Length: 116
Length: 114
Image (cartoon, rainbow over all chains, first blue to last red):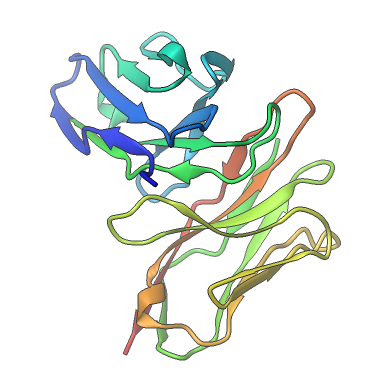
């Protein structure tokens, strides 16, 4: 069974440029998460989807971050414009959890962003 | 709000040594508790979990017991191997009735040497 696939693995951009990350969850997983992991820290939730609905986006900085999950499968996380402080690893995860519960999350390898 | 505190690393052990990584949490109610592991170059993966007080999670020789009286979920292994070298994250899941999300600790890096 294929795991959670993320791309790109690495991205280096100049500040004020846009960037987008893509995630393909495990087939059949209805719940999808985007987490932010700063160096030496644990992952922090940015947004959680149940199918195509964003059920928790309270931690997403909406002035520059946006996300979508068309058709309840793949998801894209965008930053525009990027700032120096956005340098981090962006993790995507998916799960089979029933609505309202988390259960076991399956993580991708992450997309490492460096903003110069 | 919910929080998880882990012992700082790195933890360096010789092969076959005993491992303890401390984890304590702050949360109202009865969260579920997890240990996730991140091996070099790989994504995080669930190592073990416990969903209620006094439950013991175990996997791959690792164990952790949900202690509500001390709000702790310490990870232990009796004899570590070089292949256990990784970053270990303690996490809690607090379902509030409308939504749930994992809250992670900062991670503890374990390095096992021959």
